[in-house]
Image (cartoon, rainbow, N blue to C red):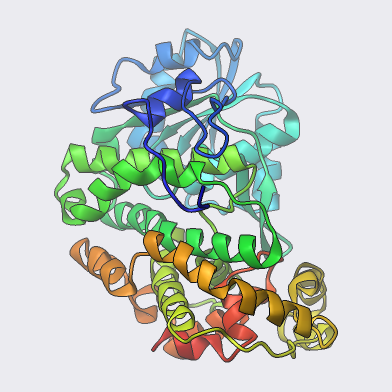
Length: 441
């Protein structure tokens, strides 16, 4: 059975099947079992908040964590609903908190007396709460305020530690509650960011397949099979999202939830975070400090187009001819600083092409190239198609749309592969020729 084929799902709705515990794994045929989880996606959750939380059995002492904006949108409503039903601790993190180690410690201190955490927000609030909950071995749930990212149901958190953005182990939510009316009224940029974060499925899948066939890493079809129906609806009418269409918003919300569950099933972010996310991480770490604030999904949208172009160029160019990687630890430390450079070298060293490994790696590439291209072909979405989807929604498509110059973006594309050990088309292109040239071809 091919690695990339998508088997027909026997349950009418993969999300319902997953939550019920009878959705069949396309690889094994066995039902996939998830930790206890409640996912509620409805046009309006007003009046249901207290019952949704009560069913989770968190105990009497609850901390509701939000920031100034998300508290105004939904947090106060959740607090009012829970008041009297629980001993409530309202934690407001201020205006635009950052998902970094220092803020996570603030959350831990502020929620020390709570039995469970209720996050009200999207990417930053969710990551801080799931990470803090994991550190303190507490349960958490989230009321979403924007369809801006796919991390609601994942078991990892993007946390910046000493200037280095890392994907750290976290705890899965016990409940994910999405009021479609709230999501549809989110700022347009946040809706576009959710679309951008969803758009990377084809490039991430292609990267993961490449790593699987060249380096023997594990690969699973389940996370991609889960997305098939909702992704088709989402990509087919992206402009409907911007009109406040609740059916389109449901497709986006489900795509984000299912993408996160795919990461949970795989025990890591592999199916939804590959080369395009490395580029985005590089931008987070090294972009000029005066560029303004941009959302993760906005950056991923632009980075996904670059990855799609690189993948098209590499696949269309015949079997690549590798050369030894020229990057050294000293050069990384000079470029990134000693601490970050050393950390990146520890991640990168295992996947670099050395003079000693070149022959064996080239042989494996030559022998498997036709099969790799044949497997990636059916699941790939061309860069032109991805760009059209973004344009229909008014989403960013170019470096200047996310506040960076083409020169800096080329630097990000060329150096993002050094940030961690995940093997992607950035590595293959970089060990053949400059990846940044292919990204803009």
